[in-house]
Length: 273
Image (cartoon, rainbow, N blue to C red; front, side):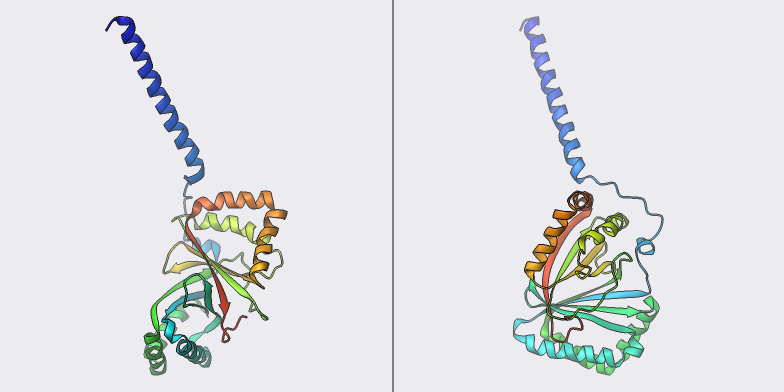
């Protein structure tokens, strides 16, 4: 091969390498804008910045055997009655009891709140472990369920206080699994978002984040009169707060690893309707 052909071949090879390098750099830059998120440095526990630790919520999930639904509802009513009759000792209140309508079928969600922080929660655990009546109720319950799950959560300080509803409503439970280290950033954005999102001041039922159980897990519970009302409420945000809402969505989506939504109906025994 003569010298001119060698130089021409080297020139082509150099151009190909430059093109490949440029493509990789551009792809990295393009995708990093969407998916790379700097985890902010924490100077302390995020629970100290986002919530009051004196009120602890417990979210209990029961997956019930399909042929045991009636027995399950009766046993659940008995358990709630037991807690209410021992309220002075247990420091607890049942805020809602729901059956999942859209999501995992034959699934029931129960939301409890305990006053007095972890000190009183420790006393609750000890009391229940020593109670023969509670043990009997548990023996009635266990054969009816396929699996169960619980987690302890704290309410976000910027969310409205939980108020029980009347009438006929549906509830949406949205679960967000965040990347570790992003809870404070999430809270900063949603402190603004909640003012835009709850335009009727009636939709935001509960906003919580996990402390024990699935960590970096956020729970938002919304209350609507119907599925149609839910659709309208979500459209209002985009119509009247489009630019601000776009900014919040753009900055919070990269914080999320996984998210789910369930539509729930309150049970007849539920304290919120």
